[in-house]
Every structure is written in structure tokens, then in C-alpha cells.
Image (cartoon, rainbow, N blue to C red):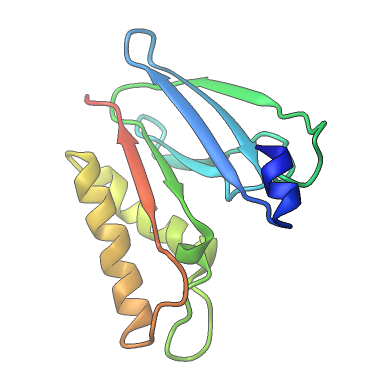
Length: 147
């Protein structure tokens, strides 16, 4: 893949995760993508899941760290693209991670399923952006461990 990206003068970011439902271990690596956010239901807290890694296509010898965390019932992992946090509001401000985190801190405790969290995030985003045209993809994925 590196050769194709180098030849085309392109690069990409990526957050990769694997979840094992038997052990409840979420293993991940990051290639300069926005880090995932982990909601800890028992503690009622949110933290970043990040691992060192550069853009894919920048260097053929890049090394990527791997991280892992054991999830507990009610926990949620939220992956998202930068188009979500870089979305512009009517006043010219970006949505940014702080607004995303605030929305998650409100949505996660009340959520009974992953879709509840997604709907709350995008409702907040739509309210913030209003009628402004979208200039980038706004994508999010939520993994929630059933209580």
C-alpha cells in the first residue's frame, strides 16, 4: 500500500480496532487519526484511547504501537472522523473534541444501546452546524458492551 500511496502523493489516517467479545478486550492501533474515546460506565468518565503511529503513506518503515483495554458492561468506544470535530458552526467555530466529549458525557449514561449514543452525537452536531454546507465526511462508530 505504501508504494501506491507514495506514487500518488497521498497518505491516509486510520484508527484500527478489534473487539473480542469472549474476553471483552479491545485492541487498537492508530495511524495519525483522531483517537477513539472510551466511556467507562462504572466510573462515569471519558478518556482517550490512543497509540503512537504516523500517517500511512508517509514512510515505508513506519512502526505502530498497539494498545488494549478490557471493557466492562456498559462501556462504549467511540470512533470518529475529523470531519465531525472540524465541522463549522454558524459563527465560524469548529465543533471540536470538547463539544463531542460534552455530548458523549450526556448521552452515554442514558444510552441503552450504541444507536442512542450515535443519535445524540449527530443531533448535537446538526444543532451546532445548522444550515451550513458540509465540506467533509462526518462519520462515527460506537461499540457498546451490553450490561
